Structures are given as structure tokens and as C-alpha cells.
Length: 555
Image (tube, rainbow, N blue to C red):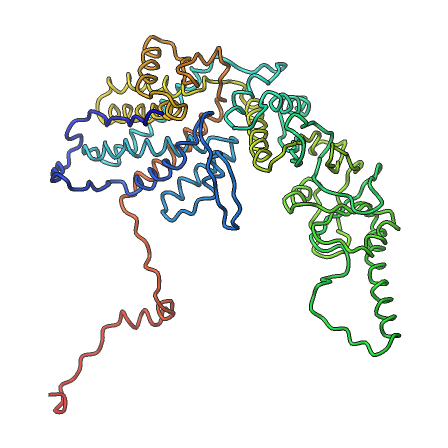
């Protein structure tokens, strides 16, 4: 695999600003960074760069609990990193903002921000004042955002099958059988789209179930949860009223350390009878409140379960806290820490168990708007494969949500970045003042993204970039980076959503402009002992010591 070709520094004048020229450093001396955030951004980009693009590699993450996680998802990698540098934390926050709003693009934010900061340091070293550099970078960003819609040559029609648009977005993940998975996502999004053409993402649920193959994944009506009915009641087909409990389904704190002082068999009989009466009272309260479905995240007592079967209450044991929290948001009912009926129980049409091969899920169905209408049940042999498929599905749903807002698509595979770099370079070479070098620096930063794509694909970066540059200079802005060299993105159907790309550029510029004003990181000294935390002792140390008077016995 060819090594990464680093971007050459811009050919800038020796002095761009009115300030004094910097002294030349002696040979062998280490050059000090003018931007204190550059080393942190470079370190963060060094971690994320191998994961960028469809041919990116994965990381083996070891969590704080000691579990191993394989992922190439930049947002998950950034979330797992323990960062101390404030600039790195700010950059991670910006990447998470992009991932939450657009579904993906965390790696784009980190890599482009690092390239912009590196180019900004070249300009600062040439003597360009920070204030002028910030204004010039803002002008370059405004020009880039204005040029972006002109590169959109394809859009998704209101009655068009979204498969072709979602496939290129979801194919950046490493899950297998991406064709079949994209068809399921396209069908789910199309079926849950509103009459006005909008999409509510909460209308599509995602459930992962171990076992089987990815080809066994399917769409089911309503909300599917990986849970197990525990009693004899396995379905409520009309008028389900749901209560959610994050406690044991039975006597409160059955494992609490306590000692029952019993002196006779009669005391033992009374103790058991009162325990039975307590359980009977708790379950009867649920039945009085018309609760016929109880979802529990905790242990289930056998005697309490028997009483629930007697009153016709369906008891479901959730497998994770995430599922029951999501169900609470959908149903609009609180999580109860005690075995008491909620004031506002959740309502749905019916709840039942659905067998899927060797596993099963529990289905919650509604007939009202604002609730999940379809659930995509993902099957797989390993937890890592299911996690990768789940991330791809959420990415596809987010992409379709963006296309419902703005159906325009722009070339992918680095073609858009290369086209913008070409236009900015041509304009920057004609501009005078600080805007000219800033436009060239912005173009150089954009060009680093297709370089990374070529590097991760195992190609010779210099050759690929030379071919792309020739094609774009000839006016063909549809040339991008593929697995074996340059490709025509229109023929290969590789597209990006305009909304996500514009949002990513805004996020990158915001964080870069913030870090441009920082020249030094000043950290508060950590206290060494308990007295340092006391402001009284601190004032006493700051108070000048009294002058000793001269006395005969002091002389």
C-alpha cells in the first residue's frame, strides 16, 4: 500500500502582514506551533483518517468495562477516546453535532478541520494577522457554500424509489448484504412517509436479534422489541394499557439484608400469609388501574407472575434499559421505580409475541400518527455484525429524512471536494489581499479528503490525484476516487446529500474559527493538598508576612 502523500505547503510570500518578520530558526531546532490546537487536531485526525470512506479500516476498542468492540464508525471511536486537550474535546463535540444532525460525517469534520488548522498555521507563519485570517476563512466558507448547490445535478423525485440514493450513503459501512439491507430501509421509509412528503424518523423502529443471517432480516408492523413474555399470557389483542417498571416484579428489594425473627410455626405461617397478601395487593392495584401489559427491566418473582396470570396481565421482561427507555418515550408513560400503577399508562392497540426462527420479539402496534409504524428486525450471528448493520440502517434513515427536506444530491467519492478546490484555487489566484491566500489554503484543505480516500483504498495517491486534477481541469467534475482508481460517480451512482455536506462545512468552519483565536492553553494548577482547596488558606498564603522586629535576643 502506498504511503500517504502529504499536502505541500502553499507557496506564500515571506511576509503577508505589516508585522515584523520572524527570526529564522537554527538548523535542528524544533519549530513551535503558532496554533496550540494543531497538535491535538493532528493526533485526533491520525486516529480517524484510516476509517474514512468505504474502504476505511476498523478499530478494536477496549471499553472501560473491558469489552472489545470492532467499529469503523468515527462517532463511536471519538466517543470511546479519553481526551484531555480542550481543543480535541471541542473538535469531538463538533463531530458529534454533525453525526447527530446528519447521521454521519464525523470523520469529515475531524479531517477537514485538521487540514484547515494546518493551512492556517502556514498563513500565520507567513505573517498574516489572525483577525484578517478569520475574516478571509469566513469569506472562503461563504463562497464554498454558495458554490455547493451548483454541483447538484441529481435529485430524488417525490414518487421515485429511493434505493439508488440510499445505497451509496449506506455503502460506507462494512456490513455485508448491503443491497438487501438498503431495500428494506428504502421500503420502510417509503411506507412511513407522510402525505405531505415529510418523514418522521421515529416512525421507523430498529431491533437487533441474535441468530440467523442478515438475509433473514425483515420488516414487521409496529414497534418490535427483543423481549420475552414470561407468563402464560402472551398476547393482548385489544386495548393494551402498558406500565413500565425499572424494578423487580415482586416484593420490594427481595435481596435486602433482613432477619425475620420467628418463634413458632404460627409466626412462619403468618409471615408467608402477609407476604402473599402484599403480592396480591400489588397485582390487584395494577388490575384496578386497567393495566394489562407490564414491561419489566429487573427480576421477576414467580409468585407475583402467577398472580399476574390470574388477573390476565401480560408480563414482559426487557433485555436492556435502552429498549425500555425508548418504549417510555414512544408510549409517553413514565418508568416506575416501584410496583405501582402509573398515573398515565401507555396505550396501544395490541401487544403480541412474534416468532422469528429460533428467536422471538414482542410487537407493539398502534393506529395513530407519531408512533412507530414499521420495525426493521436485523438478524445476524455476531453482535459486531449486528452493530454495523444497525449503524448503516440509522444512516440510511437519516439520509432519507434529509432528502425529504431537500432532495438534491451532489457527487460523492471526493468529487465534490475536488471540484470546490479547483474553483477556489482559480479564484484565490486572482484575488488580492488576505482573501487570495485564504482561498488557496481552503482549497488545499478540501483536496486532502480525496487524498485520504485514495490512501485508504490502497492506491498510489500521487497518480490518482494527478488523474483527478487533469479531469477536473478539463471540466469533468464527476470524477471521484474508487476502489481501483478514478471513477465517474454518475455511472457508479455514488452520491452525497446536499444538506449533510453543507451542514458539515458550517460545523467545520465554526470550530476552526474558534480555534484560530486560541494561541495558548492555560490550565489551572491542580491542588496538591486539602488546604489548597480552602480559600481562607489561599488568602493567607497571598497575604505578606509581617516584618520581624529587631530585639536584643534576636541579634
